[in-house]
Length: 185
Image (cartoon, rainbow, N blue to C red):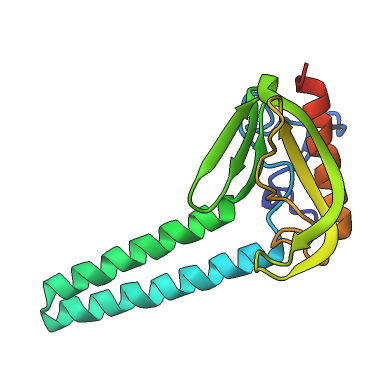
């Protein structure tokens, strides 16, 4: 028995029994989307942060029960900050739309219109392993501006999204290069 209601990108059946593809609400070219899924390392780290936030919220409830409202407010504020950090950590990456290319980092976001992008290409070079200072030889997706400067490298085959998933990196790089080829004119 197929459980089609459990999948977000299912094919809907019409009366004739033929599968008809139903577009998802986020398939329009004008919406910002990340052309790859966040990796298990990024999702796992965000889950650990959310688990930490749940413990801090639980401690806030216990502190309220003890009668110390100012300390509970501080705990609740810390929990909100940790939840915000986890959500922001999940959003880190490169996002594209028909309007341009957006590079989301933990503390800042850089948006370029496609007219400002000169090239998007994959290069072999030393890259950071999971963002730590240690470098290894790998591939990086480089976004060059029309003025000659490049954006800070964020997508590599050794970051939290693509570590131990080289085929996912190749697919994401191909999709990003295809978006650039289509809209950089």
